[in-house]
Image (cartoon, rainbow, N blue to C red; front, side, top):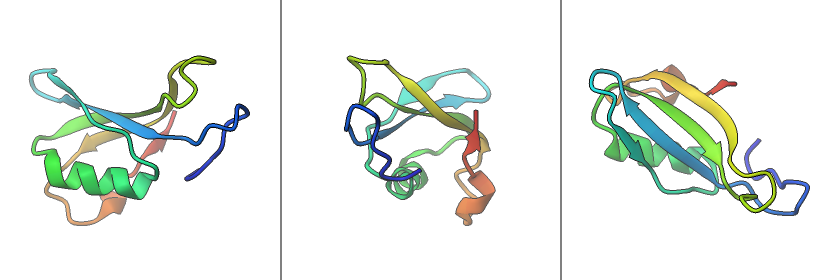
Length: 89
């Protein structure tokens, strides 16, 4: 899925939004070209257990926001990316 080009020839940009599991606060993260870059960012900056919505807005003028998937129960203290895998919607 990484580097997928939409029908409008726009490269996917992986954006994410973390939702705190305890108080519901949200934080909108910046866009990345690959899921791996997004994971690096999340590991560096997310400090609370949360759910993370992954979406693409590269075709905002056409189809608008496109949901890519969700990471349920993201744990910033797990060392393996596989434990925080993206689930398809």
